[in-house]
Image (cartoon, rainbow, N blue to C red; front, side, top):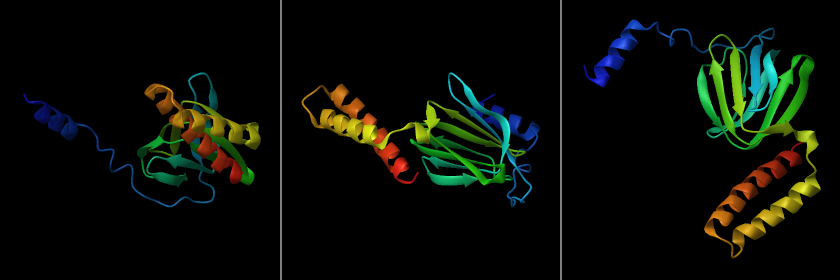
Length: 164
């Protein structure tokens, strides 16, 4: 049996998840269960929150309860978690993936994340200047590429600190 027929047959037998993930509107009392996981720790574990705002590769987005199921690649930027009582916590995330599951669950797997208030604008500015210097310098192509990636992250962080 060809691979296409195998997949097609499996899809016909599997319960449809598309019927479960229809669009709706979040009610005031609705919450989304957030799990924010790093390789070395879990910051949130199925914690009920009101909203999560993140920087996806496809653009900035806000996720509320009843959000349509999706998978988004994260770019370096701010992840804002709005908890009950409109308490906002902001994290700088270097990248990863966000998965919106049916039944109001959001899983974010990030490479690295730190509270935004842990960063010094002066240190970011200094490190950005150094990374740009290396990227434009006479080093190896590998060193220049690594410095350009580092500069991109520092530029995102500098922007985030400006909107802190």
